[in-house]
Each structure stands twice: as C-alpha cells, then as structure tokens.
Image 1 (cartoon, helix red, strand yellow):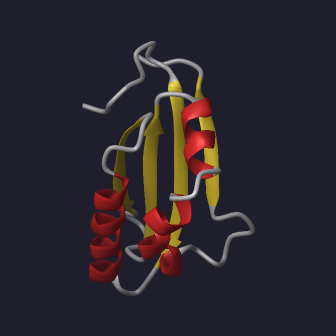
Image 2 (image 1 turned 120 degrees about the vertical axis):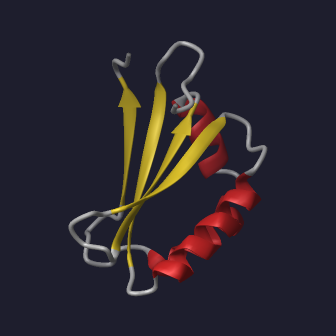
Length: 106
C-alpha cells in the first residue's frame, strides 16, 4: 500500500534515471533513502524499473504537501541527501523530473 497524505492528496515527485549499472543505481537509491529518513513531510519513496527498457528507472517520492516538498527542496540538505542518485539522471531528457499534485485518489 502506498503512503498517502492525511487528506488522501499530496504531491508525487518523479525523477527519471538511465543506466547500464542497475546494481549501482539500486545502491545509490538505498543510500539516498537512508539520508532522507525523517525528512518532515516525506511519506515515502520507491525505485521503479521499466519493464520495456531495463536501463530506465524512476524514483517516485510521496510528499504530504507541496509546501513540505518546497521547504525541503530549498533547504540546505537537499543536494547532499540526493547526491548518490545524481550521476544516474536521465540526460536524454530536457527535464529529468516532474512534480504532480494529487487531485483524486481511492
């Protein structure tokens, strides 16, 4: 079951990655996740691997609110906490991330 914000809404942040080193991105994901433990408003994250292109990955994080996400993103720890994953960002994309506000859920 996916963590949800108290009102059933919130924000999902998607970070797109590409690599020929699946073990490397998995290790980086676990390291970054450990660094993110306890960040206020972060409800959880997942590492997804494409079933059609095994070198494509997405990290999806679930936030309680846009305010919580923005506060963390603009804070001093953001770059340090996510540093392990940065080398794996998908450079083929103009913008290797997306932010979505949940407008409905069951």
